[in-house]
Length: 499
Image 1 (cartoon, rainbow, N blue to C red):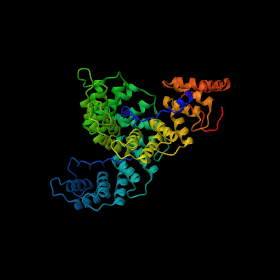
Image 2 (image 1 turned 180 degrees about the horizontal axis):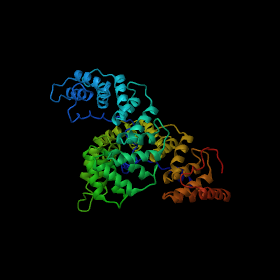
Image 3 (image 1 turned 90 degrees about the vertical axis):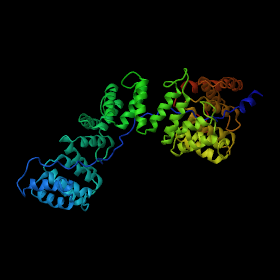
Image 4 (image 1 turned 30 degrees about the vertical axis):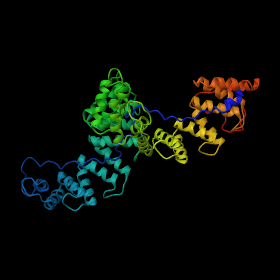
């Protein structure tokens, strides 16, 4: 009878997945992979008077007509005068004319003519013109797209001290666009741009220092770069500083500073910052009332983050509305709405949680097919609760036909990461022989590992199974347990395996 009791005690995993951790920022990839910065404004008028009809005089008149300074704005007249000045060798006229053609500012947009005159100015080392030529090759304006040629022009401008080009080179050498990836060269150019005050270059240089990519890791220096970038209002740096101060990157943890920077980031509409503030309220690290977490502020910040599309916050609200804790009135329908939004964004925890609502018909119509589909989507992203749930379903035949191979596949994936429920269930399956062929050695080994992982049912189950085992089977089980390491696949992929 004892063995029969063990056979029927396979554990289902039906609880909602807990709210996941911080929405970290400092692993963000560079977010601007093209050099699509605004064109450099037109050059200022020459300060002193120039002889009539000279290139300089024509340039000054053209600039006045282009900008409407002292005369009525007349782009066509500006074009005419810029042409005279540029063709007579005036570099600023060639550059401004190139920009007019490039933007179609009051005249017909013409990328070919734009490139012609930008190259004319670039030939005289006009650095902004060189940069704009690079962008033309980047974007295919007046020429075929050519990342390698763009890189050469960016390099030329960067070597002349152009900060945006230096920043762009940093991105290119990091991403491998038009050139082989070279993290050290990427850091070199980002650092040069940062030294000239380019905010996002400073953020990315700090990111390289944090991750030790292209430069020796230095957390204190990384923090210093982020502070400089944040002071120039770089949104990624502002967001990352909250995370850095909370977790102690480059300095001792400082919740006050973390809260300050999270709030600055939240003011910019960053949903992840609101989410992290909610976690601080949830943990009682800020805003505690009489020593207890401020649930009202927690929910308010989760709500703000969720409304801004943050999937972690949407999942968190779904979990909160599925319970009667934290001062939230349980509302399965509202929980399903938020979980659906997060699941649509591919968040594995939300896919699992929404699948559980469909599995039990809470807040949604009972739908076993949707439940299994959502569980599988989550499990394929290594969501451990979904792996266990799929294993249980395929083993028990509930919601789907029994499928021993699928049951073992998903349970082994979870068990390989040390999950006690998955280890226990595999031990029961191999010990009972009801679903898959009995393998006493595997059963004892899995139950021993489940016991070691803290499963309260495993020890008794192991003792029951071991009472029917031979000494050889016990020995083989001990060998499996002693040789296994976390992350290593356990035996049993082939249901006919023998140790």
